[in-house]
Image 1: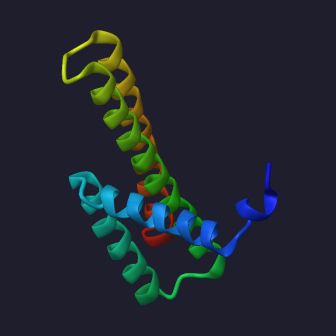
Image 2: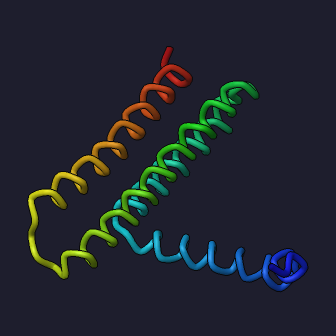
Length: 120
């Protein structure tokens, strides 16, 4: 295996290009747009409330957690839809429901963190 090729500037640039393509595809999803709006609102509120560095860390982790779970949920949904060729299958429904549940857990956790920081 040629490690020089794997570490080349071009291959690293391509990796970033692929990642940005993935983010662009994610942003076409309706739920991602909702998460983006929520993240913007929380960031603005953080600046207006002059929250502490530790609170920014908590907010950053909460926002990241939601984005990561949403991205993985979207991947699983698309993979399941591809594998089933559009047909309904009970096992695939369960997989997709569990993945959506993970996003819900992340979102509720983020809301709790925001409430602790901004309300209490």
